[in-house]
Amino acid sequence: MEEKEITNLTDEHQEYVINMGPQHPSTHGVLRLKVSLKGEIVKSIEPHIGYIHSGIEKMCESITYPQIIHLTDRMDYISAHINNEAVCLNVEKALEIDIPDRIKVIRTIMSELTRIQSHQLWWACFGMDLGGLTCFFYGLRDREKILDIFEETCGGRMIVSYNCPGGLMYDIHPNFQKRVKDFIKYFRKILPEYDQLLTGNVIFHERSKGIGTLTKEDAISFGVTGPTGRASGFSCDVRKHEPYSAYDRVQFKEILFDEGDTFHRYLARIDEMWESMKIIEQLIDNIPEGPFAVKMKPIIKLPEGEYYQRVETARGELGVFVISDGNKNPYRVKFRSPNFSNLSVLNHIAKGFKIADLVAIGGSLDLIIPDIDR
Amino acid sequence: MRSIIEYFKEIIFGVWSLLKGMKVTGSYFFRPSTIVTQKYPSNRNDLVMFDRFKGEVIMPHDENNEHKCTGCGICELNCPNGTIEIISQTIVTEEGKKKKAIDKHIYRLSMCTFCGLCVKACPSNALAFGQKFEHAVFNRALLIKQLNKPGSKLKKGVE
Image (cartoon, rainbow over all chains, first blue to last red; front, side):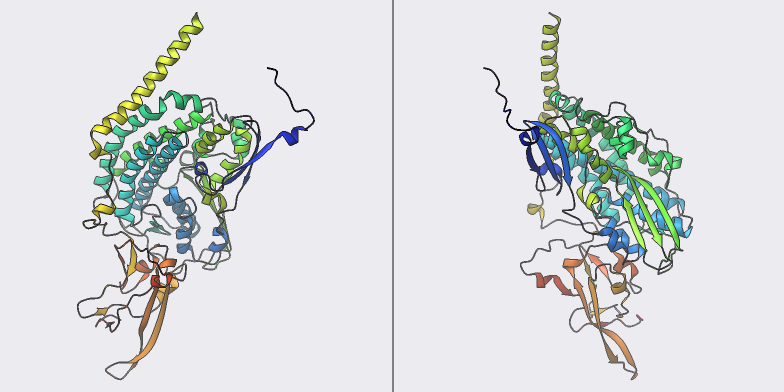
């Protein structure tokens, strides 16, 4: 039978606009995507953000520097520790304090544990987005082990609040080293299971290979960082290019791929977990002795000026920009969040693919919505 | 001919990859103890939280109903959300001196973000974190707590 085309309507009218979100399970939060469809093909995506806008940047202007920590915890809540580290490093840079090695090493270990648990959660959710519920259970089971380490040392599981300007809130727990070593031993055995379960799966291959390809040029012009950018060949690892804390004394590889499709964004994160484990193994046995915090004044005042510090969170480059007018409160704080830039590329890479692929592409970008809205 | 071989190869590879995944899940089916993390509601009676766990802010009292809070208000200043409110009163000590002392230490659990700044900043270690974490109540007013117990007084030697 001949296919009949509706000719009396313009192209614009043939488009079908649907709302994905704000309450859609695959957006992992309250992100609303206005998707224009032609049949099943995505024509354009317009992200509407601000559903969970909490005004963190503005709130920072009325509180002191140690108090900012509890707000950055809630920005990118999956990599809370690394966000806190960014603020602390910025304050310490402004005050020109020398941080003892012990603090640097503990911060690095904690950051890498945060990165692993973030990628585990991402793996779990990504598998679930593509229809494999088993991944979700297995990923969360392994993440629980890291959360227990956090709970024992920091007191919190996700919202750790462990950093403070000048060091750490408390010293590490006596069990910390043993628990981390046990976890590394356990996870080295478990990670190949992830590959058997999802990486080699034929359904997963069909749904991710060649989907949502992002070129290196586009990654650079959109400012896409983190594993998403590195899967496109954009060498953007802040840990390598501008080492902070103890990253200058450890050996690790920056994971780079050239393809830039959903499958390679997946591989980049899996490989990063291996690299993070390598970093932790190099540091865990030789944590130097020393104080866990530098003695700070009760009221921290930054000298007048502008300060910028960037760190590599689990999703990309986070920048903290502080303008100080010499008071105990910052004059202005700006966060350059990785997720906001990563979201901006979604329209570009998902165009022309099916709506079911949009879930896979969105999942592979690993978006955290409170970090976008701030 | 070649395309047919490719076609069957793909089918065999697909089935093989699915079987590999099912081997993992199947192996866990026969050793369920390695996959279960916690049986939470049923292990409630013997559930021990870590000693640093931030459940709620408490003010430890000793057996004589004495606490260490002098009512200086540093915790109130350090709290980012106005969770803590200190209502102080003036008392007359045994020597006849007038002295500021704590009347009520109000703690609003509903506003607390468990950042730990109050506990860390307290100069006399009067505050600590409790391990209780099941805070659900039917009335919001129940979340406003008074940390110093009624009739309690300041421990001797704490200034």
